[in-house]
Image 1 (tube, rainbow, N blue to C red):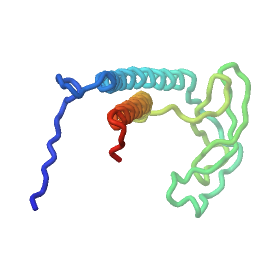
Image 2: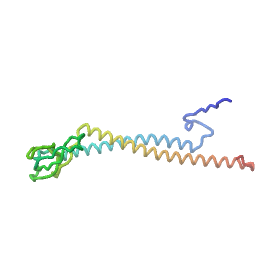
Image 3: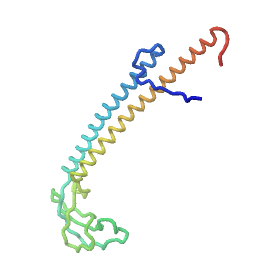
Image 4: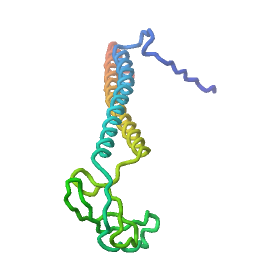
Amino acid sequence: MEASECTTVRWWRWRRNALKRRVDVVEAWVVLAGWVLALLVGLVAGLMAAGTVERAVDRQRAESRQVPAVLVKDAPGPSPAREASDQRVWGKVRWTAADGSAHREEARVPPRAPAGSTVSVWVNRSGDITTPPVSGGEAWLHIAVGGALAGAFAGCAVLGVTWVTHLALDRRRMAQWDAEWERIDTRRGWKTG
């Protein structure tokens, strides 16, 4: 017994065909429009997200500055549990803000630093300690990943809507086929299956 061959006809929805229905043409246009729209929406969303992240990074850089602070008391030694980290410990520091007000807070300082030693801390506009702004490489990474993820999610959302529409059109096609088979079967008064 010979094996049967299955030939796939590509682009059949775009060709002239006596068996092609209107729902097939609609489905072809929906799928094509869905892919094009997914690419465009993904690109626009990615660019908008990258711009938003870039503005946030620029704002963080503009709002924070590095100031010298004095260690109030001796810093403790490193914890054995922090072997793999940068070995910094928490210590009480004081500094003067831009408006002249004195501040005291805990900050990350080198271990066993003596009282009175000067360390640099990053502060925001209100004079509170904050994290240092991201470096150029970190900023580029945040912008690229934020834009790529936003673009991918937006594109996938459009493709999801396209897929659901495709399924609805498939169901409609199957319902039309069922109705036609029912009409053909009962035309002569008997059923084939």
